Every structure is written in structure tokens, then in C-alpha cells.
Length: 99
Image (cartoon, rainbow, N blue to C red; front, side, top):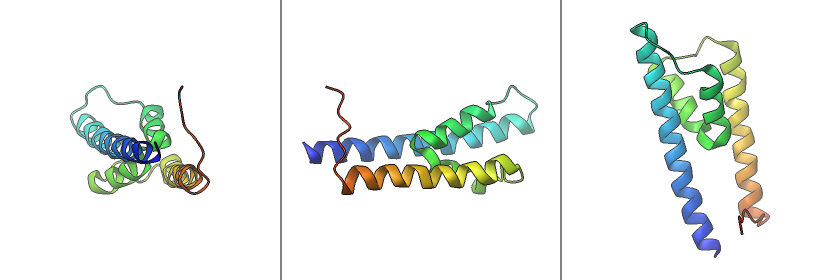
């Protein structure tokens, strides 16, 4: 049971971080080409639902949203938030069951 939880948690984290990373890249591309953009709230939401590392990596790689104060503060806070949730889940065995 615990092994299954760990496996699916890892799959989820890899996927959501990849999605967050790509979302920042797509938004940067759209910004350069004057196209419809991804909402800032969506980019931040991706960070807060587990994609914080992908969001930060996307900010650095694509040089996107790096000067926006909101992102300078909220993305690192998302990393802290997500890290605390993971530590609680793995060290204190908080069940995240949807039975």
C-alpha cells in the first residue's frame, strides 16, 4: 500500500513538474509572438499543486516571469509549501486516500 502511494506520488510529481515547466515555456513563446497568453493564476496554480520545481526551472530556463515580484515571492513559497506537504506525507505517514 505504502509502496503504491510512493510510486503514484512520484509519477504525479514528475508529470506536474513537467507540465509546469512546459507551461512557462509556452507562455514565453506566446509572449514573444503576441498571442493569447496563459493566465498568471494558472502558472502559479501549477506551482502550488506540486509543480513548484518545474515552475522555478521554467522561469530560469525560459527567462520568463523572473522580474515579476509576484513570481519571485510566490514560486519559492510554493516550493516550501510543497516540500512541507511531502515531508508530512512521507515522515508522518499522513494517508492521502480517496476511498
